[in-house]
Length: 297
Image (cartoon, rainbow, N blue to C red; front, side):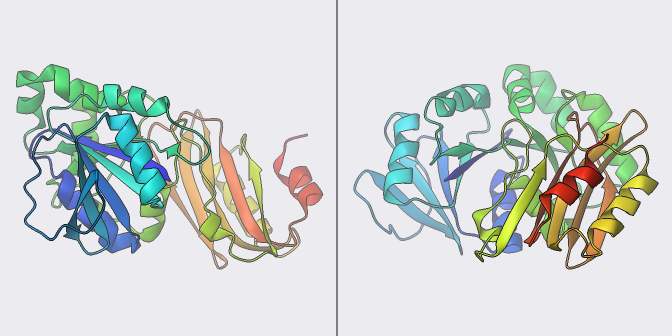
């Protein structure tokens, strides 16, 4: 079970974001609301004794639990065992405390993802000024910032807001509203662990013939070199590659890239602080050739 904390100040739009994520990905999520008290969801109770489960939207259910939070998460894992558990804290919650509680129960069956904070693009300055303790804890606990109420903002508007927010250096910034994201962007959000590393989905390895190759330090000198390497990887010499994803960066650029069915996409990304990484999935992968090609001599 992968656990994703989605925080945000009161009225930021956390539930709207979760609904959009459900629709865009087609995945089923269980959502547990933490520190809300009573949950006012007018819908049919589905099941369980200690867990009250309410239908929130198609493919997405909401749980209200009256017990220690880490025990609540273990109970959900043992009884419902969803692929994803979304933790939606109150708008005046402290996600850092929730994260510390969840770290104590993380093991191979429970994996913590890089948390998301929803920031209200219209009201964030006022919220931060009046409630800095809550707002800053939400911002500093997150690994991804999503600006809500930003459908009509330009990329420059996004950058200006991030400049004002001044988040930590290793946080992932998005430069458009989530309604404009493609499926690769959503999947990236759902497959990053706390350290920011890409997690290989079991669903991406449906056939016994498929295998994966991962390189945690991937370096290129220029965007042109990245294009060259992606083109070479897709020639078939290194195996029948069906999926590539990762990051490449140095002092001059910061890029994310992906390839599906022979078509690759490269885009700028902000504040990626790793040493580059690449994940390759396919059939008959030649690891020696891949090492020789991708690892600098």
